[in-house]
View 1: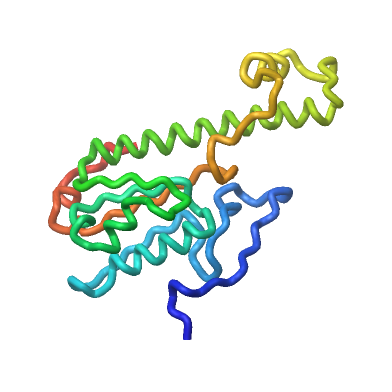
View 2: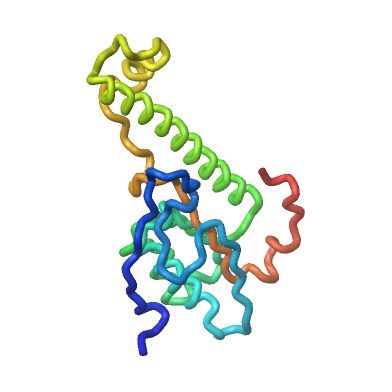
Length: 193
């Protein structure tokens, strides 16, 4: 019988031509929750919480479900599996590892996520202008003045490049590992965006 990490079923990407919300268009491993899921792994020391988390994150990574993975773990260097995971070797997603948690570090990551999403929205606007230009047969008379400014000043008359390697809306996995008993659970984080 195959283990959880060995299951390799084919995936089907949702059609981008329908009205499927963008967050549901990211590919996910079969039989796994869709993105924007909150999961909590509870168990005693050595019960396999971090190992299961790594396996699950690697399954999502194989399907390019995330562009970035952010890990807050003070003990990652003590566990060979977690240490290898936070190194980012062999992963599609870029990995950022923090050995401690602070509200400022989390806010920095939230700011990066927001900037990634703003870049994505700008890309979508530019792509719509470019596609209109191509559909018009490169006829500048069919374009609005605002669209011509986008083509000339922002795109230099070339097709825009996706801000993500996946070519899909940015998605980030944030992992909090072994933080019980640390300041993360004693801080008031009500002011976070």
